[in-house]
Length: 152
Image 1: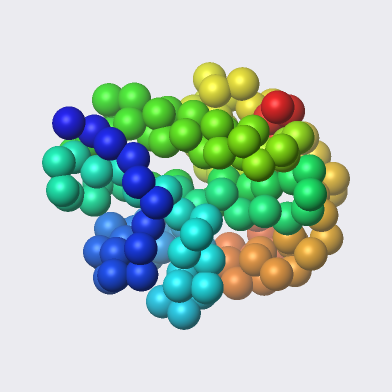
Image 2: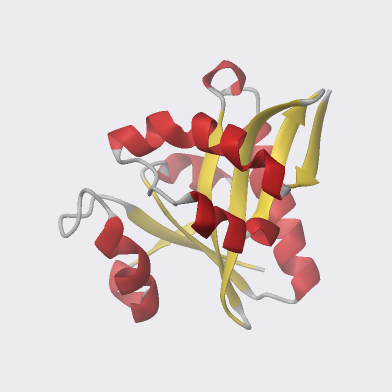
């Protein structure tokens, strides 16, 4: 049975193991245990029974803008709408917080477009986003990610 819950600090080792293959390929940015811990309240986990099978973070940039980050679903569960349900849970949380927009930087454009995100120019992203995160990327400064936004 698939369920969602907020992450706890003792979930960090399993989260890091789950995301490591995507970090290795450069699909997802690396985040230290300390960085995950500092932002632990941002993370929502997906569980199958007691097993963590995915997670995402809803990172707030401004009173009206958040970003879905580090979205990962275990390979065995992909194609079963688990990722879509996780994004929907993040959207619900954003709405409950009073946010107006959610952005993503992704290589999975079609996935997010199915969830009503629309492409925007990367130049329209907040500058602090580019310098705080993108500088850490193994692909920087040649970025092939697509920026998309959803208005709530």
